[in-house]
Length: 285
Ligand code: SIN
Image 1 (cartoon, rainbow, N blue to C red):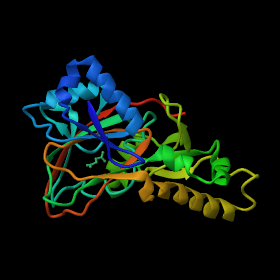
Image 2: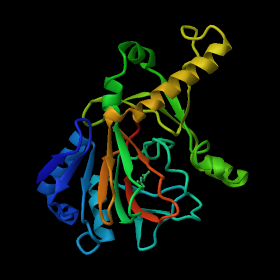
Image 3: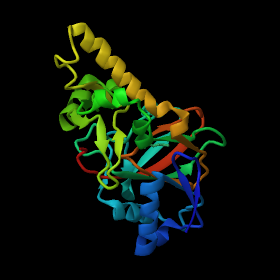
């Protein structure tokens, strides 16, 4: 398998690989998985429906684990493991992707990995960016690392997707997806790397307000909010990023534990159609 790294920080393109082969070939699958852990996001071109059917797309992702659906976006009627991220000028969900995030951190067990295929894209625009959150943690000043050790943060469906919903629907989904608490510094369960694990779904720290840090209530509101925004902002550092220009039938798969991503919404009124398999993950520690 030929692997072409795309930056010094993150991302590689797999050349001459048909993902459909990896559904049945253990050796090829293992090579791809090792590359995924190393490069964190992998890209492929020309994975057309005749070479990789929707069922093969699901079957490849199922080799990584059980697939999950999405609380808001619908699944493909013939391939229920594939979530349709179809954007058009009248799309009701046309704003939600436009922030740095890991998929599903509002869940107790956020997704482990995702496998995304482009079905239709604008002639230019609609790129997706990923950031390496292991590097983002590694490069933090030691004083910040010491300060955030042991911090826990709350992640909310309610405050993100829920915000644009009518109250009754938002509260019903809030009951189904109550806020989840995760460590701010997560350990990758397979590589053992430490990584920064706050993103657009993160609303606040739950254990910041202790006497060692807070003299008055003022400190809590100001200091905790500033620290959280500083940490969330780390994904925006260009040195941690890779940017992928889509073509029809290009694919990306990412380790959703060690990366964040941002789908650039610079293409309306064009259409953009993506299909994504998301793989259930572990409880972060
Ligand atoms: C996602 O946020 O999982 C989808 C990214 C994309 O549509 O590029």
